[in-house]
Length: 383
Image (cartoon, rainbow, N blue to C red):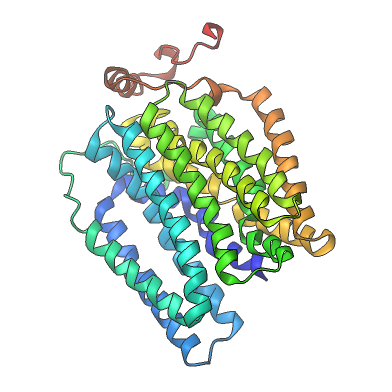
């Protein structure tokens, strides 16, 4: 049932990622991101009030999570392209690394403060506080200036745009390689995240220390993202892939160690790898396509992330049979092996490098040429 909660939250990404990407390319991204707050905030507050009044039933949780997931589709696609619009290609590495760092800090603080708040005041008040924090997010995001010069003229209309977005998987080999790594990491690594507290239950600690354990995920991601922002590595793709393997490796130690402190440290190290992965993921996707197709490319990214609920179902069923620790171990080891086989077939993501502003501009111009006349962007023989 815990894993099913994750399925409800993340399944809209699988089903709606391509649609969200088309909407981001076609309509005002800023208004779309702002609009999703008016759906998620009432859902959180109402659910919290129902729990405080003692009338909460299990089935009520899942539709609220699903609606929140729908909001995430439009937020995830629109917000990252807005960042690109605001800072431009010359600063996008730092900007997205800082965005990933902010997410990591929020994850760490939210897990730690949430566990403490639940222990002190209960789940209902924790949900109300979440709604209040979303109001702050809405207020600050409303201060982001509207981008009036962004090029949306090339965004096609209707069903043809959705079909074009899917076709990019056939024509853009680098994009396919990047999305493949994303799908493996989400299916086999992030799918076990709802089980972190279940695995931590073997240590016999309370909600506060379980919250601290979950906070290790955010702390490690913050360190990894900050490292990318500080050093701006040229080999983005290599950092992206190596970070995934770091996460897979240390997650095994977290699941199998019988002591609280070493297990928490291994989880933090795994999260550092996820910081490398998360801070390079979106920019790799946006650099793989032309400007007018970035929203749809990020929509495909959302769909790749959307395999997460399928992984959650699989890990949940394994955990029912073998236990939570064994399920996490089986999942991440399987992911590492299968991703290695995939990269032998589609290794392009490993060779992605940081592009200069001039190169990004030239890439956008090349996308306007027929494919037969486009020059090769990534020459694998050079490596």
